[in-house]
Image 1: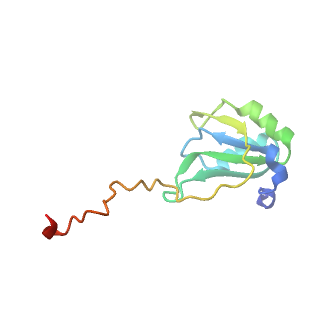
Image 2 (image 1 turned 180 degrees about the horizontal axis):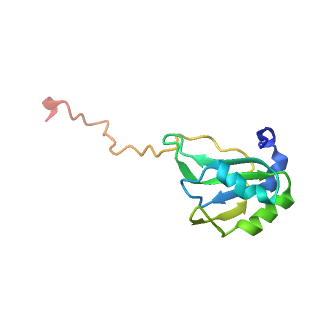
Image 3 (image 1 turned 135 degrees about the vertical axis):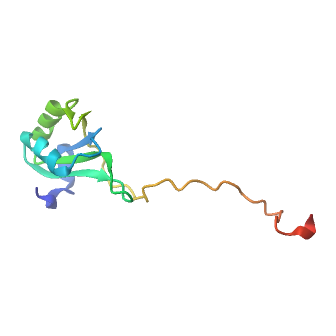
Length: 123
């Protein structure tokens, strides 16, 4: 698998978005399953940055659009690893800003600037 071409914008039509992946599936297993339909330039499963656990989706980039379309038509809604795959053409045009990967929440309480809870003399 040649990852040098994986970021090439000309590969847009040949990249598939894979969802509903089993959380235990490995990239090697997925590669074997998908390369039956053509040469794969890049394949990756997206993982949580903190736990390193699969998030249940990934991407496969084929050498050409025809192979990607063939794989999509043959494998969409087929079972792999005990789950029904959902496959679509990837359509993101530019990278998103990377986040921490977990919800940080909001500020629960806002203190009034006119009130100091620690100043007992004002009570």
